[in-house]
Image 1 (tube, rainbow, N blue to C red):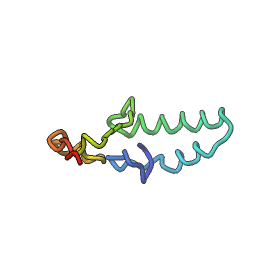
Image 2: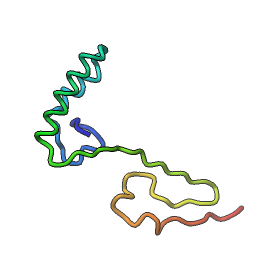
Image 3: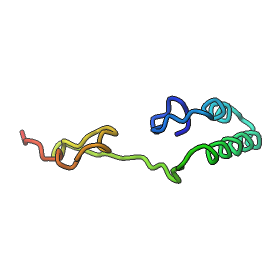
Length: 89
């Protein structure tokens, strides 16, 4: 959420982008924790809202049900209106 090219970085906040990369690359758990604490301090100071949970969106379609939007576009359109059945062959 807080990296320059992050899919969920809707606010384009990238002040800690390099630090996140460094933390991910750090193998020592104690050192990684220190880096994450620094990242958390910056994000808490700079960002007006912070999501507490990031849940995956799961979409299942099959041969009988289709039409749902299979991308994050569902956030911006009435996605349920496109769901329907498929023709049997």
